[in-house]
Length: 77
Image (cartoon, rainbow, N blue to C red):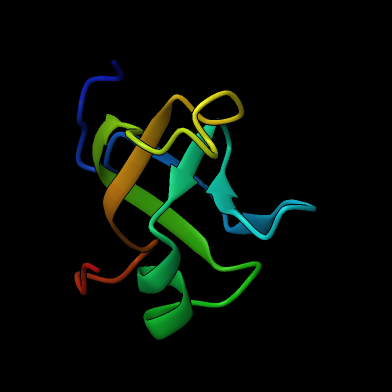
């Protein structure tokens, strides 16, 4: 697992796959959090990464971020 730095564990752009999953690099993003607080194309910093417990998306994304924020902002989702 990546080590956390001041910039978080991982930084990247929010994207969406053909199945409707939101992701950033190799990490699945919490769907409801993205829907409520973010937009496709936002640059985010992942703060907490856990194992993905969903059978539906595990093969594509074995890890999931449940805490992330816009790059350059202290606000965290």
